[in-house]
Image 1 (spheres, rainbow, N blue to C red):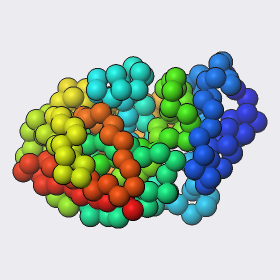
Image 2 (image 1 turned 30 degrees about the vertical axis):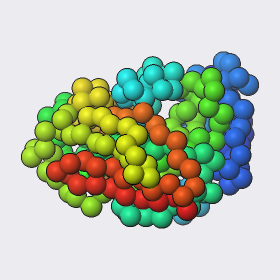
Image 3 (image 1 turned 90 degrees about the vertical axis):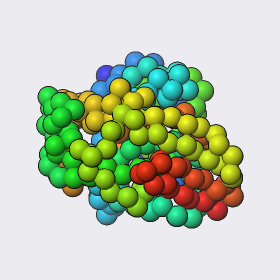
Image 4 (image 1 turned 120 degrees about the vertical axis):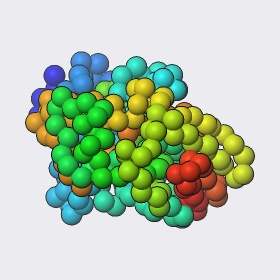
Length: 260
């Protein structure tokens, strides 16, 4: 376990990297003794600084929930991060490419909660607590070198969350066969990735229940009104300046954005 001074120093580094958009050496290469609990302590310190600076927490993201993502990253367990108000964008957004150190994008479903979800929740509990589900894209932005990173590195970096692009549609969770929601991800008119939401732990609501358990272990909970990214069911796709992105969710509509 790292001491408090080291936790604060690492958070300082990550905050500076977010501003400079430079990649830092892997934390686990510099601190091989660093544990998962340390990484969540770094994330919490980083989030505290953002709140002090005037940003508002609007939800959480779950990462590394699908085999596709685990194989793509070489990390074999889920993680989570915090979503702030200035990270949420609407479909059709023009996104500044230079706002990120690197840009990858994933296809997901987002749950907006009507009620709190507590530890021990089932899939049925999550569905009952959900006001609506909507398509979403996650923009990934890592401030740590990618090669050789572990879940400890990723968690410390707020699970590599850059931004969230949210679709226009709002659908009752009880009216959608959630595991069979499909997404087709297109870049500049070419299909790059496809997947179905069952890739997220068998059911995307199971990811939300997993997160409720994890947050409970750290003394927090999923609250009413929060936006929860349930996890990607495609591999991350690299994005370049000028790329036009489209994600087609069939009857749930589509999301578009462009990186400028």
